[in-house]
Image 1 (cartoon, rainbow, N blue to C red):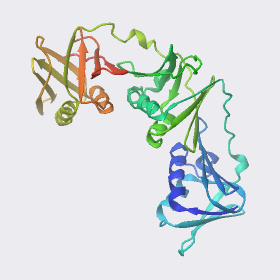
Image 2: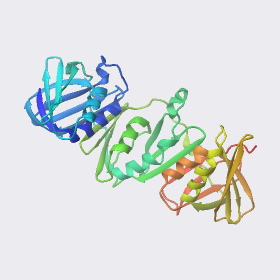
Image 3: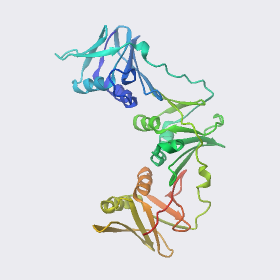
Image 4: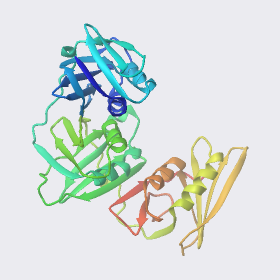
Length: 367
């Protein structure tokens, strides 16, 4: 194998490929990135067995061939080399990497490509396209609410389903819930049972996909496939029964107050300096004002007042600092409303005016 290409083009793709890899063992094929040079195209693959990545970039192929190289060191080499054209030459069990116009030369041990795992192929049971901007927004509004408790593995991913003519995405860790829905299009999406998508593939889509164009999704019993731009991703789905999230969503809440989203975020940032280990912050709401406060044992307290739209009686609500900060960060509107019936029952955070998403949070006890 022998090919040349621009360092900047290859660096971007190898960086994404390395994100997939979880093994750091240099002698493991799962630590390696697959390279195939053919027809002036370089195919790049990486996998951690559960999540697979494939992309293709244009290169100048002088001699076709395939190999795999240790991803961590390959990325390190590309990061260290100046921009410009690079030459890659495969010789027996090593690959030589050198800039065309610089006296720099690296050699990396390689492993034969026939040991690299085969990737699953979609069977087109459920396949559809949607605007990638919409799909990214769905991820953004839900991914932070997913549980990291591995004993509750069925909540370690985001739930995704078609409900009537809507696509719905939900994340929960048992103490909070994030919900968003989008129109399913022109009725050309077949109904499918809810699936649980691991956050790893969703995080890569969120970070690496642009906002223009479509994303193609294909769903089988055990795998989801996502294609956008030149990228093809697939991931094994999480098996298990996702909680009945509809039971958590309050039917009606008679009380509400609203504030500027950035006002709340700024206040949370400041009072968080004295948030105790329980991460508890307090919201005391009176007509016209919200007092955001925290305390850390005997060390001290912090309080900030921000303007609010509220006309009811004084109420106090204790919330996990992270549980309120994360949805406020994910939201993009100027104003946010908090809805409640009683201060010890679930609150709902919604944009003002209301949109297609909301966040439900269980309050904490007020000491």
